[in-house]
Image (tube, rainbow, N blue to C red; front, side):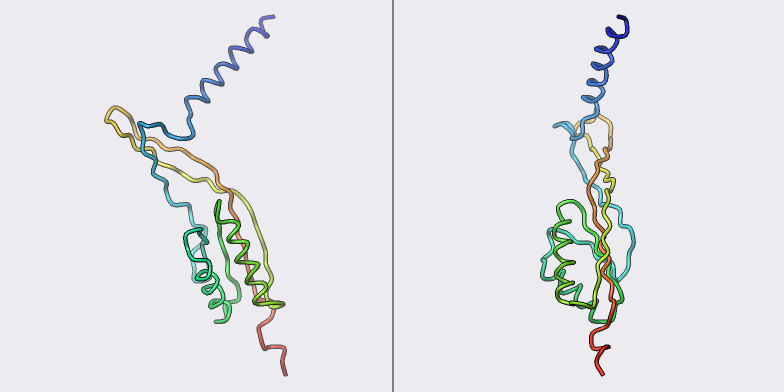
Length: 148
């Protein structure tokens, strides 16, 4: 019987701790999102966003592949995953038979800073998770290399 009585109290304590750890700040804090971590930098590494023009992203990828780049790596987070996949599929169509795609998915921890709007409160931070995709597009044959 004592165990049964302890369960409602422990459930109540868990609910209280959940309430204390708010995922989103209230009106006392301003939310400042930090930039996501970048895995690797290089000329052949592209970070796909929803804000950049799709045609410009496609042209940049085509330029890299036609200039002789052996592989390009596309990274997309959250809402940009669909655009990243679409871009990779468009490249596969444009370079038909000469490119292959390797896809890896995962999640990334993103940090947000909580800046207090009043002097009585302390600075804080919160961690949220976002889906991510990493697409490697690599050449299997160069255009015109099979011709005699």
